[in-house]
Amino acid sequence: MAFHGVDYLHIDSLFNEEELLVRQTARQFVDERVLPAIRDCYRDARFPSDLVPEMGRLGFFGANLEGYGCAGLSNVEYGLIMQELERGDSGVRSFVSVQGALVMYPIFTYGSDEQKQQWLPRLQSGEAVGCFGLTEPDFGSNPAGMRTTARRDGGDWILNGEKTWITSGTLADVAIVWARAEEGIRGFLVEKGTPGYTSSDIHGKWSMRASVTSSLALADCRVPSSAMLPGARGLKGPLGCLTQARYGIGWGVLGAAMDCYETARQYTILRKQFDGRPIASHQLVQEKLAWMITEITKAQLLAVQAGRLKDQAKLEPAHVSMLKRNNVAMALECARLSRDLLGANGITDEYPIMRHLCNLETVKTYEGTDHIHTLVIGERVTGIAAYK
Image (cartoon, rainbow, N blue to C red; front, side, top):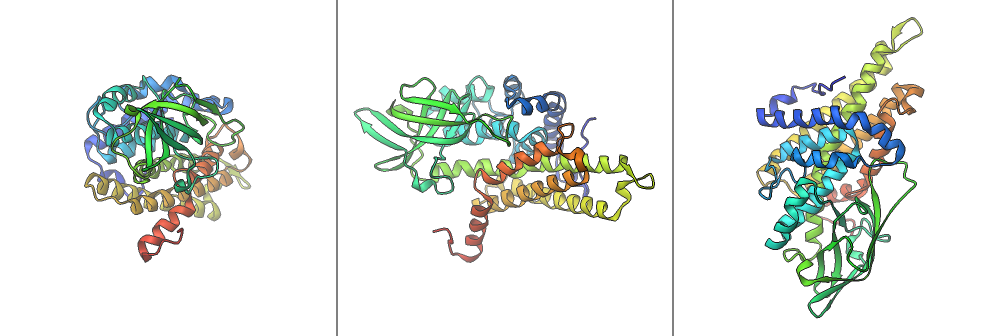
């Protein structure tokens, strides 16, 4: 069945025709291309790589960037694309988020003209794939503690260190690697095949199974000075990229929540128990559905306002923390309540709920954990940084 959306409070009235058209394009792509394949991909722990060129042609990669073949969409339109993609699967949305917000964005914002010309058109089309190397085995929430180093050697840089939990790591033609240099944190473009640079996949995941997750190793990896991102110095560079990705997550999880809610709503209307009445007629069932639609609606309003602020260059990192923290927690609870309403059927992959639930456990952790975003909001309202 085609998905018709979840709109209790006439949220669609807040969008213009162009925004609705962008959403419909992404919605149709998910219905026709993602959903028919994603169950098998999740079962097989396989990313649907065949969708990459098509997503490039549709303009999904770097959709809110200008030039270099990018679609130049508004941030609200970009958010609606993320929403629909995560309705399909968090792994698909995550691939697009990384490609655009964590690879194309830093090249676009911090890169040289040569770097932009070399990589952005290829990344936009999907001809090339990128990854973002910040997290390390011992340093996730505290990137300031990173141990990966960059040392000058003549006209080159020598990189040493390890990165982990890297989306698309083994697929990537280029990695944005962040390392500690004498003058501070710097970013480098490390191409696949560079001597001393290797990648390997992380296996045994119960979450994000339709996404490639990898570790990167750099052992005396030599890159030319032209590989360094000239405009990024200090942690402000990688953290600025993460803000872009977190914004997309805040929209994306709405799609997962909508899919869980709509699956549960339809199921409870059709499922009959006891006296032959649908279980949707019971008060406890309606209470759960009422909670879900209320929280989804509040999260939609939060996402729309964040998008409008971003398009006006008024969205701050602390705003994005509220968006990401609230909407992920909401989506995860919607998945749990929906699983409960489906009973035993909720744990089978005939329905999407358990897949969303498992994926959302990862989404709650990556791009800043729930706890970290809580403390960012706390600092914003008190002026006191509790995590320092």
